Length: 370
Figure 1 (spheres, rainbow, N blue to C red):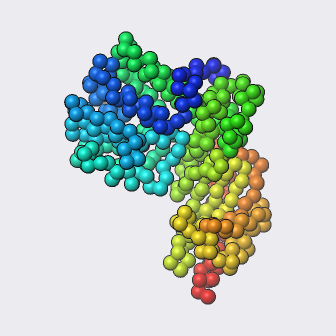
Figure 2: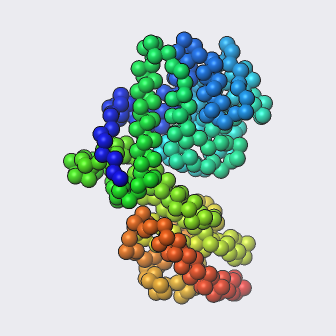
């Protein structure tokens, strides 16, 4: 059922700041640094215990410190014997092994012993960080932790706290409604590649549904797409996958088999993006790879095995990276399938890959002998 209730715009949204990661970090740091008259120590202890899922309350005394943008760490909190780090990923995802690198980014004067140092990866989609030292914290978790605090509502600071909490309620509310009713949000999937000025606010599809307008104004289409794909992956129990995006359109890459040629590892898999399906072959370290790692002979083998079979009529040769594919257009976008259809569809893709895999692997390995 559509929720057509008009969303109440907040102070942060009016200034077009609701989608800015840095503003969220600075606002949260400001709240955590508020005087005891508005945010008592005991309430802060409960807040940190709830947000970081701690087994015990931490000690907060006079040497309490909250800082932002310290060695690329978004928020750092230092108490008597504990250090808490928050990495904010509102609209982006982990890249370049950040969760590994940031473990060692703490300045010496802010470090605690390892068992008293906690790392929280804050994201809208409850993204799982690659390094297990980090815990996943969603903006919904943050909202619930802030809502549980007994604020001093007589203090003038509370006006801004209340506006920030309402901003989180709008953000989390729009996200949760989308995740439960994604078929109602065609604009999320069709307009992700557009710049804000290209998404006409006078268009009926925005005027008739306030949450769509909220998503448009805050440029949330791509991160919402990624969250939807993550749910698909979870529901289908897919393994060895990667979710990313190009030009604002999310994509799902699933690797089926690692193939070692000489001493170089490659992956055969498939990729969904929009209404395009690809069977692809790429170097394991794609980002560091070079196009010449895939020879013309390898391209010819790949083409002979996959092109003009099961509707894959287009061959995409390597350009700058060790990557080639065959592709075809689908009748529907990924989001237009129901889950039962997707299960059958992906199962057929995997079965077809498994049918052609022995031929591909055999021919490629034969090339390596010559």
